[in-house]
Amino acid sequence: MFASGRGSNLEALLAAIAADDGFGGEVALVVSDREDAGALDLARRDDIALLATPVGDDRRAWEASLLDELARHSIDVVVLAGFMRVLSASFVATWEDRILNTHPSLLPAFPGAHAVRDALDYGVRVTGATVHFVEAQVDAGPIIAQRAVEVRDGDDEAALHARIRAVEHQLLPECVRALCQGRIERRGRQVRVAPDDEEQT
Ligand code: GRF
Image 1: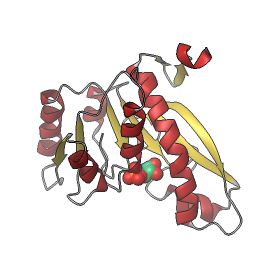
Image 2: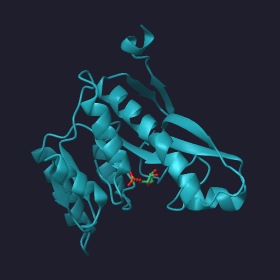
Image 3: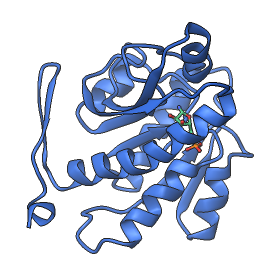
Image 4: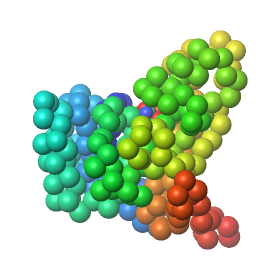
């Protein structure tokens, strides 16, 4: 899991994994470009390997060392949640179909770092959360799942983001679980998530 912020999505993912013997994966490494990220505290709490790695001047060297760390920890899937660094085209190509991001809007509306504020400023009545595969173009990879959140009169950025986060806390673990269980199939931009047999019964 790559996270620069408070880490509530990591917390939700850890809780989902802890509650489900058949989840099919575990969080083996938490990476942050900020030393003060809440996600790192969660990693310490749960004794998960962590890497606090500010980018510095040499981006290529930074990404090369990240790739080494991912290999060293035998990572299969990379999950970005509030990771505020853009990864290079070659990095994401290395992880094609194995790197996800959660974004706090209904993409392709409101890409970028201020999605919640931008949706409020625009005046939309419905926004939401998107989980998508990461590709070179930021916030534009194939969409795995989306869920809507209504904008309420009087919402400010914090209130709306809190309700979007609550939705992400469901949606992201669902998508990670489906990927770990081999239930996600992608053809070009079209993504299909096969139903979970357990959930059907
Ligand atoms: C999430 O809303 C994510 O979509 C956005 O940043 C937020 C990260 O939240 N890119 P947290 O650090 O997981 O609490």
